[in-house]
Image 1 (tube, one colour):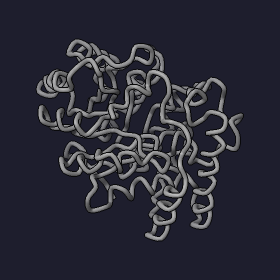
Image 2 (cartoon, helix red, strand yellow):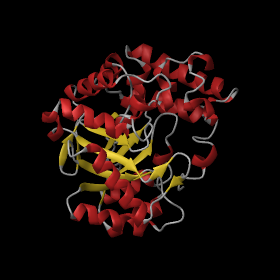
Image 3 (cartoon, helix red, strand yellow):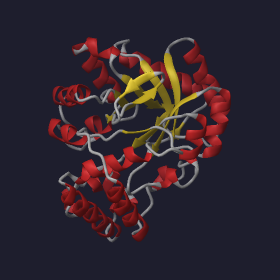
Image 4 (cartoon, helix red, strand yellow):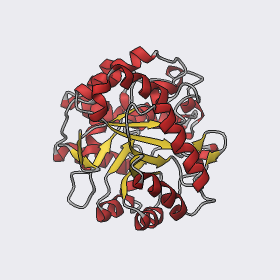
Length: 330
């Protein structure tokens, strides 16, 4: 089942580009392009990128420019969402000046090869009223430099305040079997009320739900996840046990745990009181993108089993630590 974003049809599963430019063992642009091309061939035409996904001279934007220089015909096929107004060292700057600096930088780096369908401040700036941020972005929509405005990691109050200034095109929020928060804190129901699709990032629980982890040693010591609360000794083992339960349910169905996890997220958007939900798993290989984009549907019984698993078990550790923990806008 497809979704509609900015009056354009997008696949029921999108593609997150973060891993293509942020992994400790960097893959080449040519290898990254193969993964991106395959995702599009399989129907994942909603792409999610970030101005800070990688260093200033080698992040999502440069990769996208490279891709669309090679495949200019694809620029009209993709709905591109770009997150900006954020630094991994300084945090968000959603002031009107920060908005202008970020949007202009993104446009410059893309060199006009692909339009920015949606621009999102990556985190809500506690120093700047959301209304000021949205007013600044609305000018870029009016000028035709971006197609629409998105929000990322935001509260119900923020969504309502922003939407009152300018229609919000998407709300990007973490959603997975490990993080069902948006289903419980009013964000999803508010998006349904305002007819705002949800873009669900990290539907694989930062990799826990791929089945590829057996121990902490499976994760590169330079991988940013090693610093996250859910990957600390003690918490990691407990969370791995939950992931193994998902593996059992998946095996009985004849699918992979990643396919089960993505199907569960998709299913949330098929409920009568929920908004459209588009999961955006990321990966770095063609084989993995083919796995992630396989169309899998869960039966009511299977959904009940997974929901029961969530009720019986508590994921250990907060979603983020350090500076990021204070930017959840909850």
